[in-house]
Image (cartoon, rainbow, N blue to C red; front, side, top):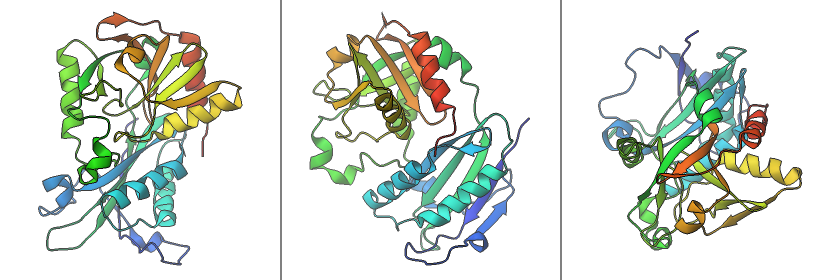
Length: 295
């Protein structure tokens, strides 16, 4: 069954003391035109977003996503979002989703309309794609040079690296490049040989008896799904770590996964044409956890 929902938010100031923000939401027809031609999100990609997975009507990791939305807003010098207002918008969108199946709720905060209302904000919900195949069979990846050294984000914060912005043209171009090389996805690496992340996912490696993810510097977006999985692994007695990961470490890993809020855990089956073993049982246990209700 296909379903879609959308609402526009009248953004409240971050210090607004109201407890009910329902009068700031305006549900709209998700198939009808809604944005002004002067909207800076579409003209310049000047805004931020979050994608929240929905499983059987339950929005996953809402707090972590809202905190990251606020973090991105701070990096981009956007007005701080009122997190209670956004949480209520997420709850409303989730209530419109089916009781069974997977979906995705997107939160968008834009700088607004040039010479007009600012900021603008809206929320959408829709069915998720079917990721049964990638979760079960794995994905092939290639490494792509991101074009900067590991220390660049600290030297050039105006590049907004580490914020989840709407400017995803490079990310989408990287995925197209990966597909042109016969792969399914890409992993960005720095010009000085260190691993970052995928265009739309975090990376987790198993090296011997440790689970490792690249440290959230170098402009890496800290993944909500990766954070949740690491908490789950630690509770089970597994060793987890954030580390500076070289390309050689990536290619010699015992197992690897890309993690994201909607695709969840997709095991990597090859890196730059080199086959890597897929641990089907471990991957299934990851996704069993990630499909369980998580707040």
